[in-house]
Image 1 (tube, rainbow, N blue to C red):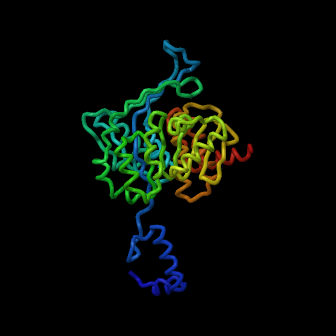
Image 2: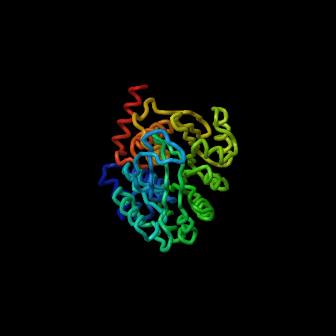
Length: 351
């Protein structure tokens, strides 16, 4: 409650300099109001799917209609949950909003996420509905051959439950949504928090279309090539087609577009720069491609919080995805800021 002149005297600067600092902090939202009460540390809210992943990977080329020798791994998964864990491993305060059942898998998810540093206080526990399960079969290269997702519980995370968390959502620095959410939840979140930057992962080609009515509210849209085709109805094969799709999404209100293309890198556009970028080295041993996109979006979110330039943001995000590819689970426990920096430095040496 000190007056500005008293603060200036203690710091040895002018009162006008104090006033300037206070004004800048207020504009950034760091100061709540009179009395110079500082806001809580920034945090990211991630809303969407959380499930148990069961991955089976064949030792050799997959043979249809036959039993394939290989390995089976069980881990925590789900697009939103993966993004939240990746952010936590990068030192970000990430808070997950999802739904789990009151069953063994639900208890496992809660424990694994807390152990990884994710804030789980807003996760909804729903009785008599099983926790989401994602079952995938990978070929011997680590690419998904086929998958089945049982995610009916996410339908229970509707507006009625989300409204109870409105205050917490309103305090977040950034919101990340996945399109596992039901339509009314997507509508309410995008229309209610128009003052928040909203990042979206489109999850799959069948679910990508769900975000179409709300594109005007999206700051950053991350989607794969097949998801981009499903969302826009246009082919994504050439650079011209990539630019056309990005321009179409920009015209509907999306500020930044990122189209991931596997080993061909990522195409990104902010309406001015339109670039294809990839790391100059590759992971030597790919175990699972399923979580690379989630790590990529987490990397973009981290870079946005740090206010990095777009090209540096993409390099950082690509390195996060590259590290994730080398682990059987969809989130690599090796992911860290130090690991990403080493990955980027290695790519720069190769370049």
